[in-house]
Length: 205
Image (tube, rainbow, N blue to C red; front, side, top):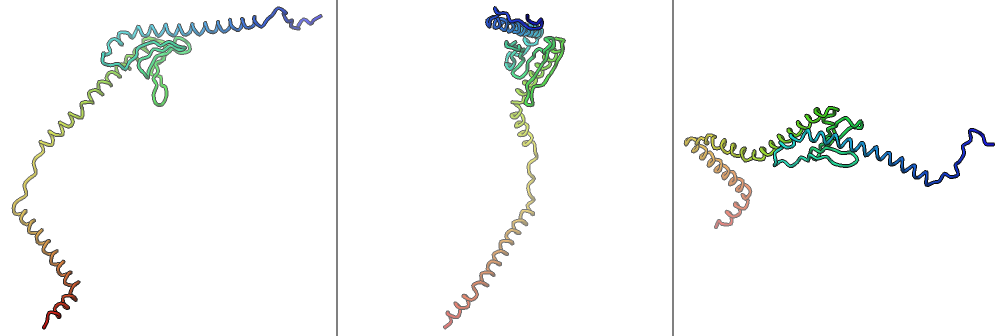
């Protein structure tokens, strides 16, 4: 007799049955993942609908916003190329995230859709104003140059030099030139004195 605690092996048990059980387990898990993805997308669609008036007010010439819910393992409501809203692991928390040079930062996080919607609205407004300031700054160099030209023209002209002072400066320059010439002549005579003496002796009868 077999012990009561000893496990018996069902001879009818096959590998195909085990494979079917594993596939069923994977299918159940996939269903959970799909359900979570659909739940995330549904909440993000609701947020996008809540923000639709804000998105519609963005000027037509500003095209750096996306405003679209992406599909995938983790759906996201994209605001622009660096910011998006995603759902937390609890499937209830909205997380407004932005990618920066130092990493991803959380701009807002709440289970209240209105709180995150207000944060997104503020972010969009800041980007619109920022772009307008950049566009206005593009014409700043021309305006600055014009102002500088006007200031230069408004400066008083140079005062003419008095006539007496001008003549004294000219005479002083001539005096310096003459003194330099005399010094040069004296140096030349000192250097060539021997030759001059020899030439004088040769010229005597």
